[in-house]
Length: 95
Image 1 (cartoon, rainbow, N blue to C red):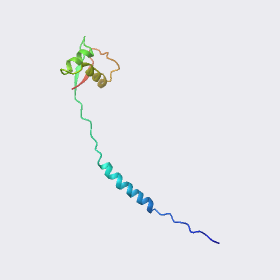
Image 2: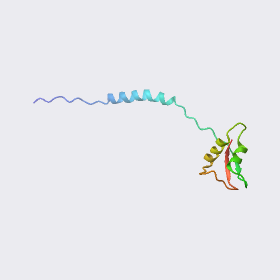
Image 3: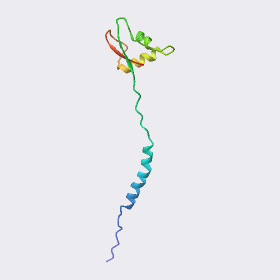
């Protein structure tokens, strides 16, 4: 009876493919750079009676800058859901 010879499966193609992948991937990954975010600095402002976000933002906005952008930043940094603030509240003001 005729029995065909089975081809032996070798690991050589898998090893060659893994080696080639490593040769390509390692240099590509080593060239990527990770940068940490620059630290943010805040000033703490305590809300006084009669103040609103506009008056506080106007006090901390540099000349020629947009007060509304400062208000938006204060709202975002402090996690406020609205522009309503109360006396005695402490707000982080980005510098």
